[in-house]
Length: 223
Length: 331
Ligand code: SF4
Image (cartoon, rainbow over the protein chains, first blue to last red):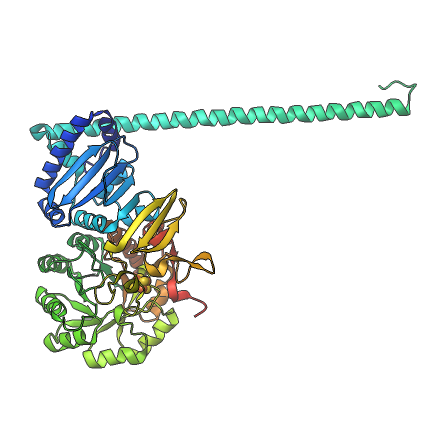
């Protein structure tokens, strides 16, 4: 995995385990780091009309509220998206990070329904275009939060991601094998049932033939 | 390697410009951050400083940059269009893409040495029309409307002697360019003067059970079932009730892709191929330009065209592709 890629399995696990206050603190720190690394992006968003966008990663329990325009850019985790929103984006965490980093085409994902966008489009279009001007790297920004140990943290994170990916692959293969065995078991049972039905039909036919023969030749025995 | 056809690629941002140049564009076209071009979306397009930087980047890599100033000035408000032409010239643009007679005249008088291309927005589709623009304003190239068959393209080139640039990939508008009022009626903003069809501030999506509903202003444009590809609420690609039944009245949401027709277009005398999509992401630009570069290089080497890459279907509007008018039998 290239270092620019995002360790999505690790992130999903870690984010899933983090208690809400810790996640809120981590997100605030990340946004501050983003502001320092991508000042042009933040300037562009600050010039927008105030707006609130809900972000719903479908593979996480947390939701996020992104605010920009008028106030400083903020990203706040929440459990539900009940407040009034200008727009909402829903998709898998890896897809959302890919969009944030400009590695994926938002329109193609929207056409194929891999992401769902609802609400007013002006804010979404402005955000997409502002992001598309930058080369945002979420992983780099997140590990930079660890200061001088950022580089080793990055290496450990990538190693963990590789291990998780391998474990995930093994699990998927076992799951598939289990399904295949079940399908096989199921097909043997079906085959036996069919054979039994055929045997039963043959027995009935033989019995009928024997009865007919007995009727036609009541004295002779059937050999 | 000899060039098969010039590849003219879109850039909505400086990042997209760099991506297009690096992916093998011969030319990149872009516009300023205002109503002077037909992709006036929020956060898109170039400041003057962006353009200067973009041109320097492109020229250093032997790539040309065209600037679209292709909308129609509003009465009494010619300033933005004048400034756009002057600044494009000052930044070192290789050509300006124009549609309006007044803008063409201004560019011809003020910047006679700046190449002038006739935009698709001018909808010049007859030999008389194109010859008029050539003789009156010295246009070097015409971007042909997307309503012509390959035979008609060939005939026009033969009768005008003007370089022709044709659309080969991207979104399609079904109406005659520069003369469509569908979006204006629904939103109050004109694609021809404000430079935006289905402006973002009028677009909204909502979920209705497992369906996705797209609206432009107050008008519902489409309702997509969960297993259907979604599309923008562009009025000409809406699904409307006709005799009580929902159907695509004008055009279905599909994207143009004419890779299999490239040899025919070259034989027709076409000079340049245009990829639509300044409003799309830099990933779209990278994907499409890379695919076209590969196909054109193969054709230049005399190889048979590679099979149409699936990756292009994924980025096409509505996830589907069409040859558009180039191969419309009924025409
Ligand atoms: S409605 Fe369709 S044809 Fe009309 S301006 Fe918009 S895209 Fe073009």
